[in-house]
Length: 132
Image (tube, rainbow, N blue to C red):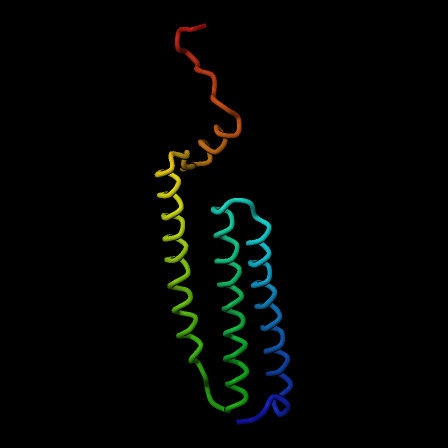
């Protein structure tokens, strides 16, 4: 196995680029976690950002170790598979738990964009009820 200083230039450039892109996407997902307001908004940014970031970082790892060891290294595909499978499942379970908790506390659960808009605008006027 070669060291990082003995890595071919093409592999070092590709690895560095993929690591920068992957870490940048992961950082964007983490910033989204901090900046977004509600729980439902917060669960999307980290899952999408870190999943894409993880993909680029794992590809960088595959390029690095393939060039360093002189053979095809694809162990990272297994890591990517498990993260890709578990992230949406975790997201779904967290959202279901939050919705259950809100309904148990008697809060209104937003199920569509229309009901969210109604909550912002207040009750809509009744049209055609005979009270004109």
